[in-house]
Length: 507
Ligand SMILES: Cc1cc2nc3c(=O)[nH]c(=O)nc-3n(C[C@H](O)[C@H](O)[C@H](O)COP(=O)(O)OP(=O)(O)OC[C@H]3O[C@@H](n4cnc5c(N)ncnc54)[C@H](O)[C@@H]3O)c2cc1C
Image (cartoon, rainbow, N blue to C red):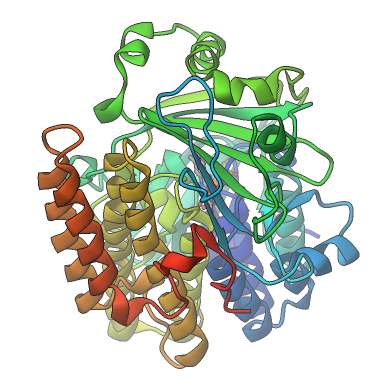
């Protein structure tokens, strides 16, 4: 299709977020330009979806008449409808606490394992998104509904000569092109090009979480089930096949994600927290990502066993590494612009909040862009930003508390359960409050956010001198258990489940 020069909305970035937003706006009759500096398919990280992400995606597909997106919300439908789009099956979250021992220690009461079910069957399961395929699919959907895609755009320049007058110029091949719009959206993720251009301040130093990451894709990684059996454990009590989950390997100095796709490809990433680095890691100071990865494996032989036959996948064929992963801008909107959550900020892959947060941001933004104007729109855009900022603040505490607890699994479990209470309460509210959508993870519920803030201060005090006093820790865990009771609808903290939660799904 031929592209015009003037649009209702320009979206910078054609990742999952930008493309989904473009598909909705275009399907609803807006003229939309998507501008990306790269070309699909390309490598992208952020793969593990959640019940919340799927609830919102399902609702968006139905509300905006995009039935082609519905199969993405359940593993069974995805595999039947789009076998060519690679994904993995995600029945829930699994955690293995390796501690500082060289070998993982399993016991009959699963003291070092936690499995939390998110959905009741493989058919209804969530998914791991192979982003090169999914993002390409989403941008194709947007194009099918007449969004205009400008890929490989170099030297992007943004001008804003007057209110509701945006001009974006870029080079493609030998040509310089300029497109205009009344509204612009920053969906460029960590690059946040529009936010940079507008000089929106960074307030990252206000965040509690402090982690850095290294990640890549591997072939030939042993299954987790095999590793469990070979290490003297047993999968017999597990509520779902452990490889059908977002697997977290926990160490005192960080954690490792392990996500398996249907063809055996495995996504692995290690998140290290400077605050809880062991001496061994602190002094390693590796030069290249490959050396850094090697040092991680050397320090973690209980995990390294699984990778004895593994090799980096040919695509993208390399490791990615970044310094501090957290970032946050002061605002996510202005009178004639908005930024998606992942451009506004990011906390951490722990709890897989990124995709769901992106969906909820899009869900909030669409009615504003499609149905509001003038002062009403300006006010709604302000509220959009306030909501996103409150969500980031809450996610930050839910994640930072986990890092603070990595040295002691019962403490980690108790803090992680706060996230599951938030997620399941949010999902419940979402299903029952369709007129006005709740903030992600109940960030609009002052009772819940105040509780998390208070507990976080207590946790900080408890862990300020290293591992803290054992009795104080037990008392603290009991306090969490009692105080989250109003948000515990799915039997979290029940002693008889011995860390194997079978029934936390909302499906
Ligand atoms: C290490 C890591 C692990 C993560 N793991 C998870 C997870 O397990 N689960 C989860 O839910 N979330 C996860 N996330 C978050 C997830 O990646 C994001 O929520 C998701 O990618 C947001 O999609 P997006 O389209 O908004 O941004 P992106 O996917 O980042 O897309 C941005 C797009 O903008 C384009 N772009 C960038 N710069 C420019 C520019 N200057 N001009 C034009 N275009 C540009 C890029 O090419 C890209 O196409 C993770 C994030 C990180 C960093």
